[in-house]
Image (cartoon, rainbow, N blue to C red):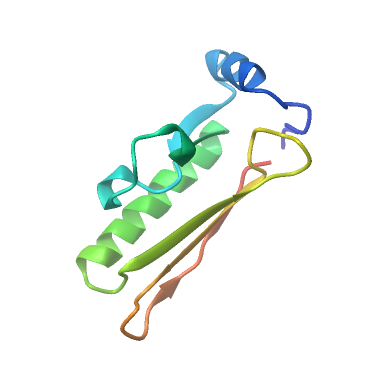
Length: 107
């Protein structure tokens, strides 16, 4: 697994994105009301982006099925890195049963 602890600026993130080592993702999916703005975007490995897309699809389906209606997404960082080391997702139903709490390990 790559170590992005030395990536401590937006310029370094952009350089890695241009090289294909990092890709942008939305923390809170646009399809579920997430804002299309910088604070909702982080850069992660392509593998982490793929995992996030699968999880988002699962959550969307669970929302459509009425199983979930609330969601929180928190990136966690190591040191001064601009690349999150993991993304913690919590989705739940405010009216009772139903939770989904995946975590994506980025690096």
